[in-house]
Length: 135
Image (cartoon, rainbow, N blue to C red):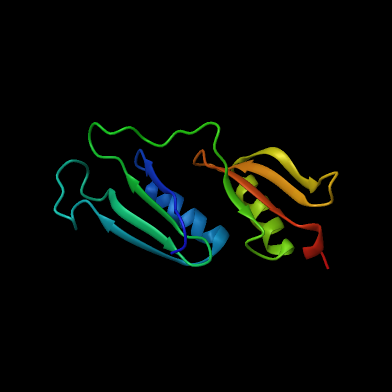
């Protein structure tokens, strides 16, 4: 891994989030449950540790009793230039299909492209590419 990777804590939707992100970004999902970790601080089938591996790497788990689930304002998870423009456009549209567009993916006055989308799990993604990447 290079640099930080987000680790989200959800209120019972970690499996759904990881599987949804796999559908968008590709990669492989690995999940271990509370029961598999011999944890008793949550439902046995809850995700104690989950990971999406591949071009986009993310972690997620379900909260244990007494923990606070993920909620964020003022933070964007940047996917600027991590793939070809057509792939980034597809990711944006796919995340928007059951999320919401915050700012359209569009060409900016300086020539580069970006947009912001909030997915169904409340994660806000900044997706874009440089003008030079458009062939």
